[in-house]
Length: 306
Image 1 (cartoon, rainbow, N blue to C red):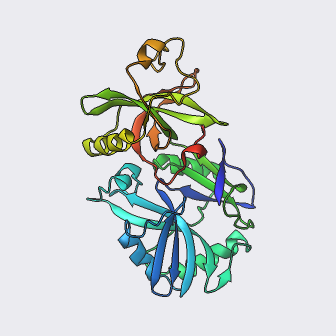
Image 2: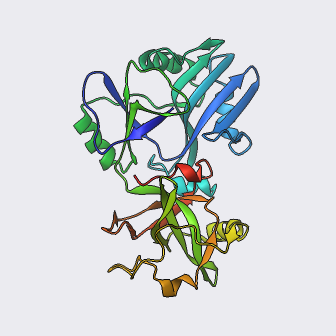
């Protein structure tokens, strides 16, 4: 089940609010002594996160299916998506925040109200090492102020009596991002001495891939080498962006003119990355974009401008 996007939190007694964690969405299945962790696109990630699997193995149930987020926390308890992707866990804690319980010892809970599923989840988690992403106290305005002050990504509002509808976005869950992050598809790059100087990224409008500009900053040497190796296998002679070339470079230099096109390499739009940025320009480009990590849990065709 996925949340719809909004610019402000809904209000009312039938809504509850949780932290939007900046990590990898994952479902955790326990069946007897066996544990399976699966990403949002159903990739088996159990071996990548053995400490998470160990915590799930200790939950208080013979069989259970949990929904949640794998998060890397720094010493102050703040999520670090970049550290999570590059497995840089020195000085960090790797945790699993569970926010839903879908099956429990042979019972399908997806048609039960969220409040009831949360009560069952709280009992199951216990002292297993799985953390509970519980409802936040206070009014929406108070919650927004507190979450912003902590530097967290955002808040997810959920209807307390809602059922769990897998495989689609639902207006019973609403997410509001406070940090300026955007998932984008890589469609090309500008060659450089370390493989590439910058990535050309975009988002889909219907079936068209629209270029949102270049990303030059935020790459560690390891990340740059990993991305370049992936891009080399995706090269194609055709530009995948529907809105290139632009007639001219914008005031901030995000545009890509026809003269610049010949210096660029194009790739099949398969790789999804997450970037932080200052703002969107009026012509639909990102200002001061910085790489955060690869989103191998997201499908390229699902990427839309937020």
